Length: 473
Image 1 (tube, rainbow, N blue to C red):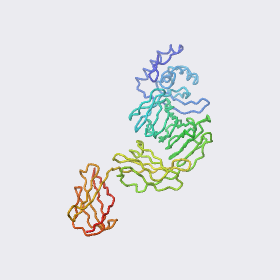
Image 2: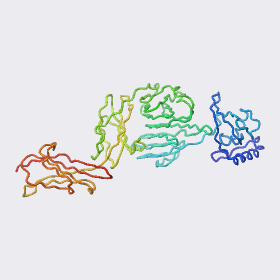
Image 3: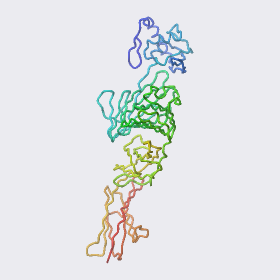
Image 4: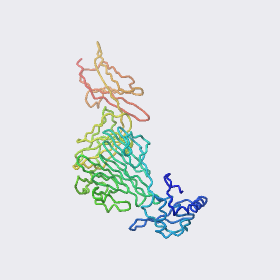
């Protein structure tokens, strides 16, 4: 019997059995000739979709069936369709019409490249397991993230699927058709949202779809987001780059099938536009997304106990979204925050370099175009105290930092105005946490201390709040 693809054993019909020996001999000759099986194919639109395979030296219909068909016994259908009289020997250069429906569809996988917080997967009805970086998911895998969970999946062509918190989805279809090489990837979004970055399709019939219970969003290469709100059944589609075809999931039409232009969709949403489809309603018309907002003082080092972002208020914004990740593309995301005000508190973070993606939210809840900023997190709490030295006219100033002070030096500034523009004392390169000043004249004084650190060729500083005291004698 002929060995079939994917490790299974092919079924051999009674009428094929007498020809097995001939087929094996032909296959052996093919192997010894060292001919690379790089088929020449041409798509052909008929009532039954077919592709054209141009035969090469050493081909037999049996070998072709083993390499490309779901069922190797279907060689007989190919023979009848193309009037092939001798399936054991095919002359080079013959154009064979091959129904696409007969071609084998091999399984694809998705790789987990980042995960944080509560993120699990389960294959069909099996128990859920934590997602692990480097793990692979297949067709039928279900992914779920908790309120603090994130995950990013990568496909073989470099496309990415970023899964924020409170999301449930299933990898419904992950297939690649033999001979044509076309891919079919369908993700069922059951709750929450996904951020997709899809590498532009190289095959005309390639398909990538995100399906919610209310819409189907199909693309051939773009950056877009789909958010399904299970509480009201609405689905938001936001397109950052390229175009997305949006259709009603219940219509039976779905997004364009492989090979069908996106223009045939019920609604085509172009870049910088979004669409909101409400439960039971028609596909939402495209609306322009809000422009990307800006941060106030984006280069500020985040050295307070909480990481806080101040956003320049944007016109028509009804809220803001800030996402934080460890990389500029935010594939490794660790925070996802929504705020009604332009001040967003992200809470504490370990020291390091991070990236913040900032967007406005419009009246329909659509998230607008984003801006991405790099920021430095440097937690450095600086405590200070001051007081007169007993039985003297000296005044002692003390400070401390809440981290390893090795390599830290301090600058002390004392003046008679709150802005300290004309300092009475400006001492640098202080290695200890104290300075004593003698014989100060009467008056009101203001002071601060600045901690300075050099690490890995970078300079960091943190100033204490300006404090004041009165000296009466």
